[in-house]
Image (tube, rainbow, N blue to C red; front, side, top):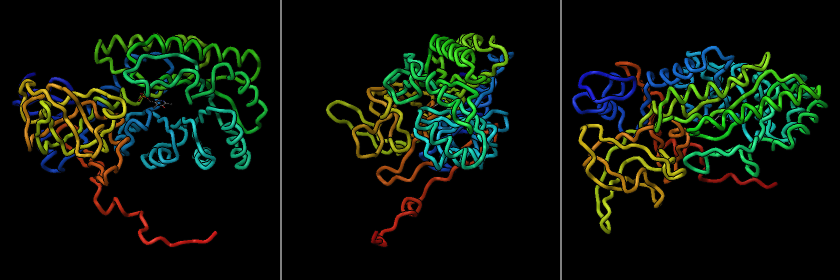
Length: 429
Ligand SMILES: *Cc1c(COP(=O)(O)O)cnc(C)c1O
């Protein structure tokens, strides 16, 4: 890598040290402490631009999946770039509203929305509620009738399309899984909806999984959605204006990202050929994953039974993906560009054997005090963090060119216990 030049937006080395855009990660660690998530504005914008370039000419609306990274500064950045959002809970509705989004910028997904969440979404004027069961339709009809409004609804179908993703927990579209309305029940549910005076069926949605590195399943899903649209319209049940292909775009790390996006756009073209039909997509990870790193300091080194162990100040509560999905994340030394020479397990301080970031991995020679960057941590990192082991959650920092800003404060010990009532006020009945 060149010295003193940023060859790409995002992360590069200057005189050996790792920088995020125009800010040294070492400087951020000094100022904010560790563990800390750092995000590059340029990478987020670059990803969004690449996606938009590939989809140019297609009638596509991008709805960023909030659960990938739900920090409001990130949401506000994406809002300023003109994307909508896909939310999955009342909490995400609150985040999106307070980050500046309107209901009409949102679609609401999720297999278990409560009546309270449905009511909040209806009151906020959410553009489409993507329902996943007959029971949910009944619940939503009740809410809409009570509020005397007509609500736009999309049917989230389970198209029974298998995808190849790095872990089975990130596949969502096969029969027997909890997501969506099984494809063989979709027509029945569509007909049932025609009898609900306060619901208007306007769309069909599918979401196949996450990190899908092959575009073929998207082509299959697009065909499936088009078939359902024709069948529903042909039966005179409703006019379907929107087909939503969900998220799951792969990073294409193993291949050519532009070729991948071209193939993806090609898959969407089947929908674009349908008259008066808009396409919706819900990318999460693709937009933010590469934009983020988790900065962590090495606390200790030890050796056990011939295995070298590097203990960091970040743990699985801060970043659970390696434990939950056995996900692979590059681990780099922030201070030096040395070649990896140490075969080690990189582990956190949490009292669980599953608390690791890498096992049997070649990393640069590091010791106590070394600063590490765990890469590709911008998606499902902070948003999945917890307080397990009573560990305050980390800080989040956004970098933009030569500037950086704290966007989430590190939690304090007091934050951990703030809502607890240690002397219970007992009630009877
Ligand atoms: C999680 C999710 C997404 C985003 O998935 P990514 O892999 O982050 O792109 C999109 N739509 C729905 C319904 C989801 O549940």
